[in-house]
Image (cartoon, rainbow, N blue to C red; front, side, top):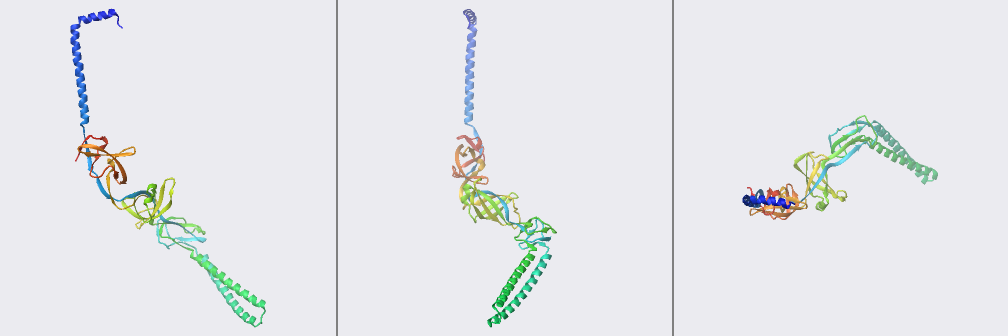
Length: 378
């Protein structure tokens, strides 16, 4: 607070300068009013400028196209058959006729086990059979003689029973000799080992000179023509696939080539962890372009072609769970909430919100809001 004396002094000064203070006061008022007018005017011009701004954009006409609905999946190529060819007898491996990577036909010779011991066994079996057959022939003659004598009561019952037993024993010996001969022949035949399937040698596990036993793996064969495609379909698409359905897919090794197969098998249960259904297709592979282990992107068409509204995916704006697009109409941007359907490469099906024929803004839509002016570049 200023005391009265000080106040008087100030008022005296003011009284002395009243002529000048009046002029200064008037100038100050004019200055303030001018400033306010300029400031307010600038604000209005800026606001007016924002409202009248025109955005340059690019647009395309929304089209309807005849497209087939499909299901997408991912999978892996696998050998149609895989077989480990093993020895079925014991012995020294005489030779192996294939190398890793070589192709083999079904029934082709793969390997040989030394057959010397098995040929000797076969000869012994043949000799044994001849001997037992001779014994059987003698036993039959003796039986016929004793049978006639027994009917005339010239030999005892015991004598007749003895020859009957000898005949049965000789007959049994022949059967056993025949079985031994068949076994010897089978063992000898197994010294030659043949391919049970047509395919390629994935791995050779033995070499000539190795001692092998019954069950020793020799060669790992795989069949890749045809080749299998195993893939999984998400739960919501599981009801859209069926056995016999055409399957199309691509692999990274041949990105520009489309391969085709036929659905062979659909597994009867869903995978709990992935909520997906496993399926299997068979694919012809005569040129051997497809290899086991390749990753495949699969498409299964699920119905005939139909007219659908499609737009470039890049034209859509996503906000949380909603999707919108902008169209140009009468020089203004209009916002459209849309509902999307199936993805077709770089395009998205629109099932609600666009009908076709609209001018869809595809460039510059990120800066737009409802009703702003737009200039569509041609």
